[in-house]
Length: 248
Image 1 (tube, rainbow, N blue to C red):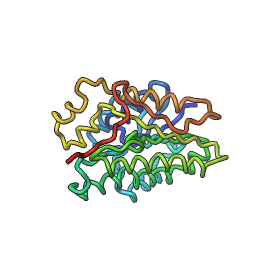
Image 2 (cartoon, rainbow, N blue to C red; image 1 turned 90 degrees about the vertical axis):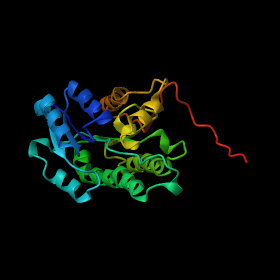
Image 3 (tube, rainbow, N blue to C red; image 1 turned 180 degrees about the vertical axis):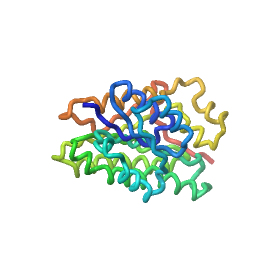
Image 4 (cartoon, one colour; image 1 turned 180 degrees about the horizontal axis):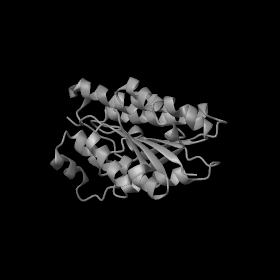
């Protein structure tokens, strides 16, 4: 029987690569995103293997509508991939634009909580799986990442606690925590500054969206009695940040 995945943020980066990986393996995908033109292009590419839905993770009421209005033949969801997320510019928090910081919190936490809660009855019924895209930023602090890192630390803890709540249900929960991945993520963070994005990844051979999609596919394909709680990945060229010392 064909399995169905629900992927948020399917129009680019890790979300799109994950959808491709699952579709190639015989899955079908419900994919959400804000950009209708990109969803339309993916629908042309993947045909009836994709149910595209225009939705904004910050609009909590609309997320409920999305789930309630799923066509009956698409309601049997076996996997939720909470991929959609963003990071505000890397300003010191005392200098940061508050609205941009709160926007990241609404997307990375509020919307994720809402869509997960709406889909849980189906996931419990089908003994499905939830894969949350966290980040090493939730474990290792860096300058300019106060709010983004906090949202990802929240997501890691949410994943662990949700797994506790779902004990005995058969639902698996995994937090995948990547380091540096070259996608549109950094371009968005730098507000469209391609040079700044390129500079970050210069001469360091970062991970790719396909690398992370492969990890997601592996977790989703494991036997149902096996749960990966947390999976942290970094490019070989990236390591843990050192302490910063300010000297007069």
